[in-house]
Image (cartoon, rainbow, N blue to C red):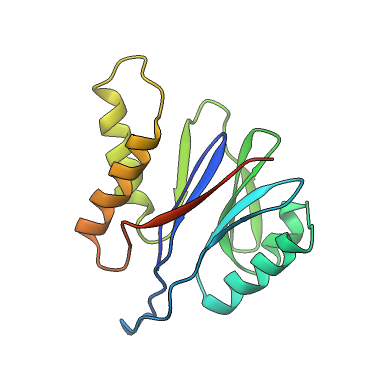
Length: 152
């Protein structure tokens, strides 16, 4: 159970790992990058570890990473890719951000609302920080602390 957010230049992921039973594991950094892409992962602990290992080994094809069964977001060549159900979807360029994980709908609604009151505003680091904090207040399976990696 987690929150991963992506903009066109950065991936952000919280550290919390929670089982369906409510048990918590040690914290885990779920964002990683290589020379080709940046990625953040959610879902099953073992699947996240497998996907992180692939990225660290230099894998550059989102379809290969998706075959692990991981849920995640990838930044490659300025585009956001969603990985889910062993498939990959390229998000539209016009979307300034996208999320995955159990807290994603809360965070995306928060960011949409925050940006709607700031005409012509660009998404800032403060906006992302606020989204993680808000989501953590609403959901106990997401953390307000997060790591980030920049797109290559």
